Length: 258
Image (spheres, rainbow, N blue to C red):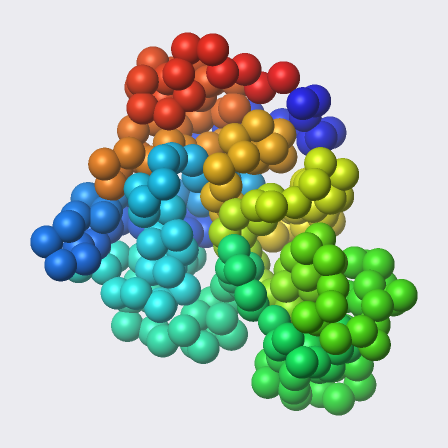
């Protein structure tokens, strides 16, 4: 697959770190899910997470948004420790948006009603609220299905709706959990462009995880391989697929980007 990005940011060493996971550990009973994991997201960066099933990628997202508390370690946004902040404060005060793998919308509400329901919670100004809803409907090309209940939408339409819902509160950090799962090739290409456009035009910092490694690597700046609860390899897509540790635990010897 050709890379859809028009540019590739080579390094984020000089970029401000907007999100940092410092020595994060998480246990479920006696099972260690995350083990002293460190991860950084640069301001304006798209970071991909890869790894086998059950390695803890979704757990990382749940810890960032506050659904789970780490057994040890700290989460920083703009150098501020957010461990003690609940989910709603992380959404509003720290500008975190989350797109879950499944669901994330109200089945019995129309596209417009879904957006309005979230906007009523996050946007006080009535005129701006309506403007924001209409803008998202237009930008995501949801006008033809504006008055269709979400339960009747296609997989791609549902995914676009959930991303639009996550953008209602104008997040600076967007988390996407397996956005390409169970979608056809053309819909994946559309979503890849949406993700890159959010970085390019909205300066949103993005973390996404997916099992579709080629699709993920086609739209990220850097990616990290998670194994045994740790980051075992990190780098640009071209560097990562040559990394011996990444090959040993995830890619194998024959994997190629295109």
